[in-house]
Image (cartoon, rainbow, N blue to C red; front, side, top):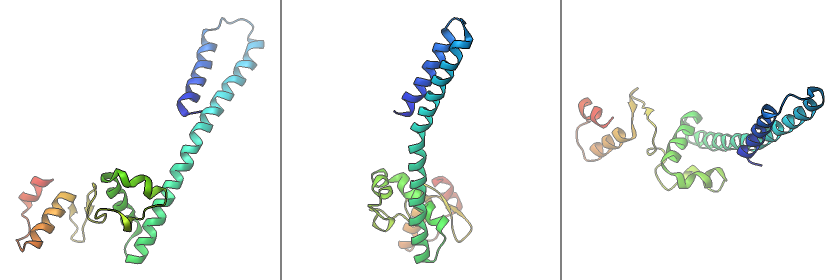
Length: 155
């Protein structure tokens, strides 16, 4: 049973109770309470696998980030953020990563420099992916660092 089906079932039982004439509450109440309890339990059971899958996804992310960070001598939190940032722009790699079939080391793109999220650089400045790419391009071309006005246009 899906979440939607379980909640719909609980809602249908509630609607049935609300629409019934009062009648003998002593006879009807235990039956309705039992049906309601069963519907709510089905709804919770439908949600439980999602919660387990979400916990497993976080554990996968944590394990990958910690292993890579330890080897590189950097922070695991920053590494996890880089992985999430990269996956946000590479949806085809999300499922293989969380299924354990793909490591960030094997990602198709530059997961440390690519991605969607900004980050705080060693210079204390918050960098957007676009501004960082422009600065790298300028540096590689031997140009002067980008002016603050030019960076503001990229933001």
